[in-house]
Length: 297
Image (spheres, rainbow, N blue to C red):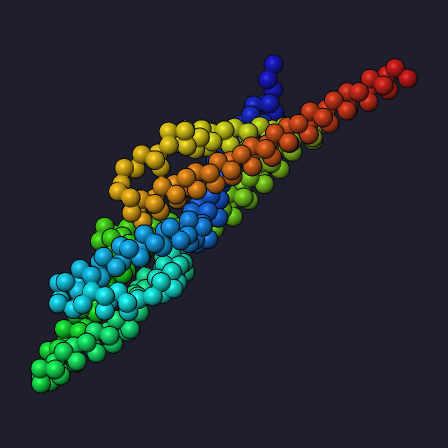
């Protein structure tokens, strides 16, 4: 027959499992999804930057064709190291914004070299025709430079802040993600309190707390592992169906990396749960053996 303490232990263990599900999910968001290093791992590869450079050059050459400026003049104004550094800065600043470290996101590529080269070309062109470099040409240089900078921003930023602002999601996401560490702390305290309550309800069998805590970890980890393993088996990343460009490369690689880390975190908690349960069973077996030896002596 179940007594009131058994029902209480089951209820606390159930609530502990629910809390652990939220805690493990938020922990993943904090240490993986909102960690710039996660994206550097797959973005900081030669294959990615080759594709990105190819796309940027294509966009800048389009600006050149549209404005009658030599495309190579604009593409040569942007170095590979500038693109690489700007990509990493864009990722860090965007995640910092989402975490609430800054009120707005205004990062723009430094187009001073592009502007100087276009301006020099325009002056040489006008000089050969005995024409002066007027305010009209100054405005044209500014406009062409802005077009080139916008192309670089569009291709470089993995998460486009302009798109987030258009749909009104930038502030909403910031409000949620900026509270992640606070939520993590609150859930951690709740977990400790519930483990303490389990300890209180096992007055005569304190070590049984290991079993109840371990079983809650086991259940929460399995619940979170099921979708992670299912998505991995279904090969969602390989079914994106995009063309072979840097966007599809980032999406496919990031989905696979994130799934792997998600499953690793849940397997880690699952292992801890199993160890706690095995530890309790070992303790119980030792106590039974010691009691039997005492009676026989």
